[in-house]
Image (cartoon, rainbow, N blue to C red; front, side):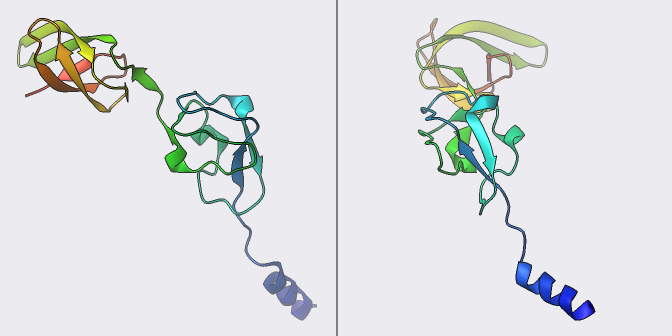
Length: 137
């Protein structure tokens, strides 16, 4: 009996991770919703849970039946190119607030170049969770 059990364990092989595939074509820059993905058994190399991908933005077009990999998605964009955004500079007790025009798209935590509308100078800042641009020295 023990020999049969050992033989079955060796023949079965290791369990393969699941693969996540889209249920429909998802275009680039589109936010992924709960009904857009399906978990299928197979040889997965990307994210292993649906929660890792829901709410993320597609960087490239995702096609039904093809696995979704980690580099195919990114956090959702908060700032669009040419959008007017608030610029904040804070240092010690000094805080300066002004407006700028974003020169590219960016999500929370990413750096983006912004043209200050008052001075026409180009500065770089980090996008905050609420869509503001925090400028530092």
